[in-house]
Image (tube, rainbow, N blue to C red):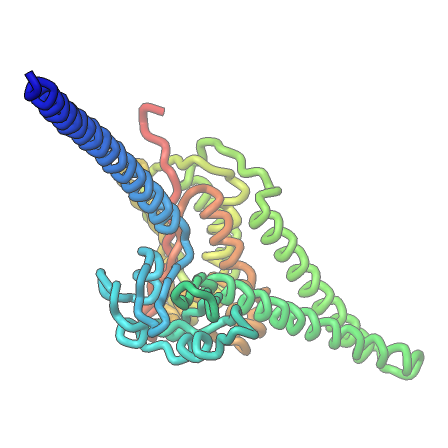
Length: 399
């Protein structure tokens, strides 16, 4: 009987131990389940964050690719970490330049100097630099130093904008102002000189001399008027303040009308004018197209050789009429062909002024043709003549 309590105590102890191990096992399972659930949620969160980060990175890169300026990001050793497509095109970099040192991608010492001069005291700078790949190109470059002293890695950011067209426009504006000043100064100085001579010698100048002075004043005043009128027309065409009418114009009839006005001048110079073009109607403003033909034929007579020949013709293809005016004069040098439609540009300055031109005729021709949606260009062989061609929309038979 005395051993029974001990047996009961041992059984109770064993039961408590079993309950402890059972509870511990259940707790371990619960803990493992919670841990697994937490890890799954953590993995899902990391995947979502990674996806969002990739989407934001892609959107940001697409945004940087969409801007016209070139963008570069360089590390502290000036190795390329990011380059957008405009920068690759502007600098003619390899298709995949990431990891290259800037000096390995492009030989541009001016840019290297701009970057190397950045300091913690001067973290950003902007300069206009010549293009490393084009003798005529110019870029506006902004460079900035990021994190020069902070805990994050030091980087350089470079933004590049092509300002070649802006520079050319500014150059053309300066040339235009210089040219127009010169063109106006010459007749004004002649008028002023003759007028001062007449006023300083009233009653003492022979009648014939006085008449010659007055004729010179009138001639230069007419030249001033021509220049001013051409400038006003050109300005109005460029700003589209002159309305361009659209109607069916009989090109053959219009051409014969214009050439009749030049027959006397052509005959005096021994020049024959030949017209060979089909019966074609074009859409346009008859007054402006007449002005184009007038200027081109006028030039052909001025610069064609004496006893020479002017040929005028046209052809139609795919509802486009191409008209040409050709002379057999001295021609135009190849380097001047691209510039002859610029304001006041002259191939032969002395000869142009002697013939009385304003230097604006071809610029007006270009503006009129472009206002009609056409094109105009010149072809020339030095010593064999020049051919001017322009296109205009033609009217089909069904219209």
